[in-house]
Image (cartoon, rainbow, N blue to C red; front, side, top):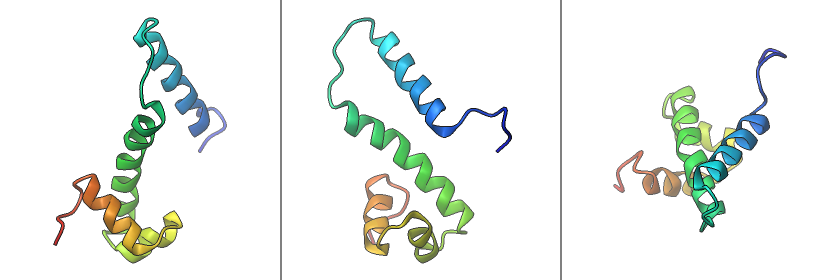
Length: 82
């Protein structure tokens, strides 16, 4: 990442701030779960692609148990339950 690129934290901070602006005073509900779900799916998609769909490798990179990764992939409909 170049020094001119915003950090991941800066991107999240800006997106959450924009979300609150878009609410225009309306109180958010379940913000934590919504944000985690919004970030988790694209994270899993990118990591799985980089790991060439190798779940063991992806789980290791993410610091997750392989079964936990499988559960999350199913939850986000990135793999079938089979």
